[in-house]
Every structure is written in structure tokens, then in C-alpha cells.
Length: 444
Image (cartoon, rainbow, N blue to C red; front, side, top):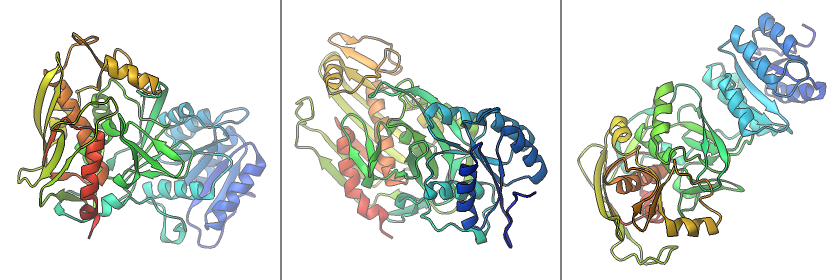
């Protein structure tokens, strides 16, 4: 028990496992400054014995160690103490490291050299999850917050807050970068909101209209030097399932999967959703708002009657009608949808896939985009019609526009009650209308 460093009134014990003594010492010093007790181990075998002996509340575990590596050690720890949260540490973490560690039950992964805020934020989240973060161990750092989730402007029905029952990992191709990448979704406490982060980095990007940086062919949010793109399908699914608090870890782009949101729906349902209570108010539209574009798009197309508007509607949920009008062979498509349940979204909107025309794809690829477009994740349209697949719905393109719209409108941090009418619009138009609503939605 010689390296068990207890302080007066300490209630939480954290173990640091690393084969570098200097790392153990540095991390313990940070934790002890926050009045946690610490214990160390320099190998996987020693860590396992000390888990049995001391039952630590939280463990920091190095991925790369001689003998048992961190993944094997994690697996052994989880077998004998499945409720103990483990934070992985690494000098060169990758998305594959994070995915494997999360599959084995790790709570989080942070990178060396350590950032104190990153360490303490991860500790706070892990102990909050296990209800072990007593008032004496409150952290002197900014808590994850998102102005959207806490707003009460245009106050409608209180829906209560929700997160995922446990962490979720997914893996797929990115549409624009072409890279294969992972997606890690981690539950967050009440009043946190939705946030994106890169693996091992402490800074997050709140999912909110203020952080939208680009709407060219996808929605991209940015904070300081970090950004993530193609978030709309994931956001649409979180909107439909009314997920309030979540940390989303990925590289620079959310995977496209099969071009739709079906796989995300199935993944969320497979792990379940946790009701958190609290307050989370629907945005109830009380007057009409409209945006009409006056500019040609990136391909030189004239807007003509292109517009999007939202108006009051007493029907529960968000009602959306969308009309598109392309040259032959596509022509006009129209669809109307009421977002009143996850099941309705899953059946009628989530299966609708991303689409593009041959000319448009060529333009995108010259711009360094659409490198991940594949025959199985993209509806490709040529001069004679759809080239690579059978449509899932006769108006699948219009339904996909509604999918994007549902995702973009979750950038206010709350679901809406109202009616949206959109004609030939895209992400940029959605963002312009959201900007009109922003100040009213966040006022209190």
C-alpha cells in the first residue's frame, strides 16, 4: 500500500497504469491537486491485482505497454470489475485505437502530452456517469455547455432531456474526403447539449448554428482550428430521436454509411436511449419566417422560385413539405412529412440517400470533394436517369432533401413545432432561415 496516496476526506480513488514512472507521477500530481486519491501500477498484471485489492473508482490506462498492452489489460479489468470506468491514454491515438478501446468498454481516450483540462474534463464526465463525483471534487474548468439545449425562447412543450444508454461506435466511408473513419457517440450528463470532438482533444465544437462555417454541399461546423463536416444525416437522426446530450468523436467528417440515415437509426435503437428528465423546450413557431435566395449556386443554376419558409402550425411535431424540380429525366418531386415519432422518420425519411448528377460529381471531384462516393452509398444520375441503383421511393430525392433539412434545423439545439415549406433549397438556404430564428430561439 506504499504508493496509495490518500488525503484527508478523499472519497474517490483513481489508479494510473503506465509502464513509464514519470507519466504515472505527472498524472497523479494533477489528480491529487484536485483532491483525489491515487494509486499506480506499471504493468497490466499489476493493475489487475490492484483492481482486486483496492477497487478504484476510475482508471487511467496506457494503450502501449510492454507485456500486456492496454487493450488486453482493459479486457481483463472489465471482466472482474465491469462497472469501473477506464480512460485510455496514448502517445499516438488513432480512430482505430479509440474504436477498439470503446468496443472493449473504455469510457474515453486522451493523448499524451497531457492537457490538464482534457484530463479533468474526462474525469468529471466519467465520475458523473457513475454518480461518484461528490461536491468536494468539483472541477475548476468549464463544463460542457451548449446554449441551444438551455434556451427557452419561443417556448413550447417541455420534452425532457435524453442521451444514449451507453457509448456507441460506428465505422464507415466519408463521402467527401474518401477516408474510412469511425464515429464514437458517448452519453453526456443533463444540460450538456450536443458536441463534436476529435479523438484525444479536449476542445469541443457545440452543435449550434453559431458554429456553422460552410454549407457548400454539406453542413460543416468549426470552432477555433477544429472542424467537422457532413453532419446533417447524424443530426437528423438525433433530432428525430430527440437526443439532447451527446459527445460525438470522429475525424474531420462524419461517415456517409449507405448514403442515408438508416444505419444510424438501427445503431441508436440497438443500445437504447436514457431519459434524463430536466427541461428541454420545443421551439414553437409563432410567426412566419422566410428566406429567398437571390444568387446562383456553385454550378451556375438560377434560383428562380427557390425559397424556404416556416410558419406556425398546431399539428404536433415539425411538418415539412419539399418540392424539387430538376431537368428531365428527374423532373418534379414533392413530398410532405410530419416528424412526430422516431418510427415515422425511420420508415419514411431515413432510408432516402444522398444523390448527385454526373456533371455535379465531376465538379465536386475537381474541387477535391466526393472522393468517397461509391456505387453503394450514392444515387448517381446521368442523362437517362439513375445509373447505379433502384430508387427506394419514387420521390426519394425529395425525401432526402427533407432528411438534410431535419438535420440542419437541429442546429438550434431544440426540436421545432411548426410547418416548413421548401422549394428547390439546400443547406445554405436552411442556414439563412435558421439565422433569422436564432435570436428569438435563444432568448429567455
